[in-house]
Length: 229
Image 1: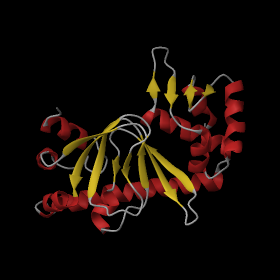
Image 2: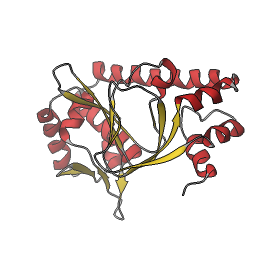
Image 3: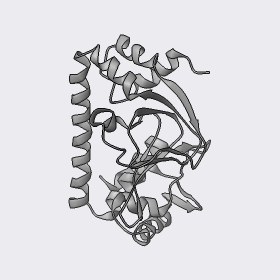
Image 4: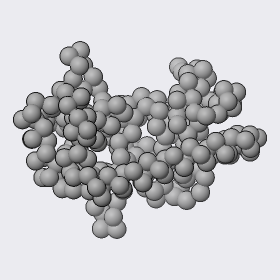
């Protein structure tokens, strides 16, 4: 069973909390509980009340949104150290997206009430949190810039490299498996599955990766990084 020290270590790695003093993180960790999710399980669902914050300890999570017609689009892939639900913790609005485990996943969970009590007792932490969330907004702006100025080949290579760092599963040969469907890659990049497949086939002919059922295996990450110069 994970200890408070384990929770503290995971929370300290979270960008949202990384700048806070050790004693503040320790106090929050004492309020966290561990939850386990099987592959395919929903951690939070779009539209539900946002009453807790999840910090991913292990595994991988797909973030998706739905249209009024019921169509689903994947917008992000998250891994250890990432958090789910931080905006609902602050604005008290319903969940803006659905989070689904794409493999066996564990998270530390802190309720809004516990998080609020912790924050009220530590007003100096609010500024650090605001600065960190500002950096997240800047990263979102960078993503929009990529859409405007980079072609699909460059954006796909960049996305694969980012996912390799975040949720990749390296093997003994140094290859990295990504459990991501081509349709989900298309959703994240704002293009069709067919467009993604065309670029993946190009990368495969170069010997940089190979496609397989339910995912992609990266063979030469450095070559993919060179695509973006």
